[in-house]
Image 1: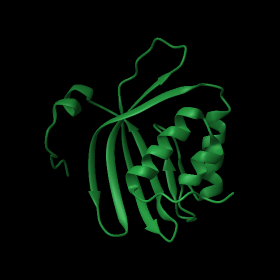
Image 2: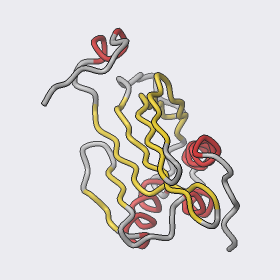
Image 3: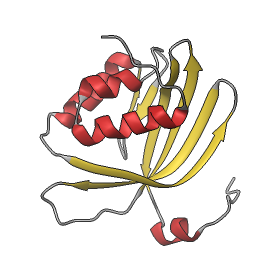
Image 4: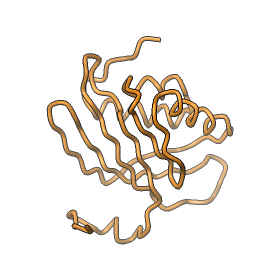
Length: 143
């Protein structure tokens, strides 16, 4: 399958979250950079390194049959010529469930290559303090 070109990191990010919401494994993997050092960390989960491990992790998630509604907010983006970093709050609900989970903190790292922008690292963590995150206007140094 040919990978579609993503002219901007934002295009790659939209494709990633669209594939996630549709549980479309092929579309999901088309966003990832062909780099064996690509990394994916699901919330509270293990670190998956390399495309085969990343593909398997998404395959297992999608095979649960759950349908996810995913949206992002509060983006903080940095971009250079060949790399972009997007830190966002990720809001996920599962169709058919009434539970609204707190947002997740997600960092997506995109790299630009011959085929355009692609995802190199996706790292999502549970948020420890939802109220504090939503009210924070500027970055704070923690360590």
